[in-house]
Amino acid sequence: MTTTTRIRSLVGALVLTGALVACSTATTPTAVPTASPAASASAISPTPTPTPVASATPEPSAPPSATPAATPSPSATDCAITPVTFAPPSDRLVDVTVAATAGADIVTFTFGRSSIPANPAGAPTGALHVAAQPYTMAGSGLSVAVAGEQVLDLVFDHMSIVADTGDPTFTGEPTLTSSGRAFRSGVLYDASEGHQNWYLGFDGPGCVTLTRSGSTVIVAFAHG
Image 1 (cartoon, one colour):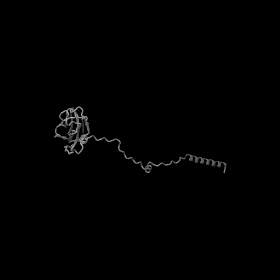
Image 2 (cartoon, one colour; image 1 turned 135 degrees about the vertical axis):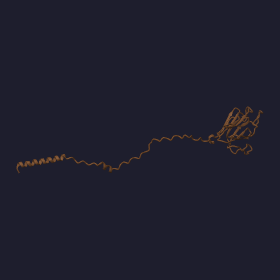
Image 3 (tube, one colour; image 1 turned 30 degrees about the vertical axis):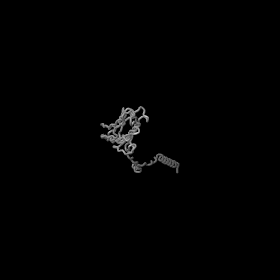
């Protein structure tokens, strides 16, 4: 081979090598294919849609009924009898009367002047409370019939049965009757040894008041 031919062969080899290098350098790497949206959607389970929660805003309340609620009828517990103690006007009971008014039946105990300035047994006392059964006469123990759904015990102690001054004491009937709506009957069950005690029977819800006014003690039985 001649020198010229060798040179041409070398130059051709170099050119070919450069071309290969150039092609190798210019080649763009193949990109990794990404999944298509359709393929992704089919491959991943969709996130479940949350169930709607009821609104926290409270529903408006229904307007109140225009019809007023019925007022409960009075019962015995509405006017429960509370025991009371008091000082009578004097130690000398002189009269007892019963009267009916529009709203209540009234039993009035009237007292005179004291029989003696200082009662040796002590100052007169009074008390009103629910009577204990059986209802009996003091001393004899005989049974006493008292008309009324409920019965009270009105007690006067340290009383003068016979006034030392000669003034009259109570000489009225030992029983009381009434045509009223609440009070039914009264019985003087003890009139001895300084006692003047009464059973008072009545009907109704039990609304009873005791008032001392001047020379009187008034027991009022409200109509139910």
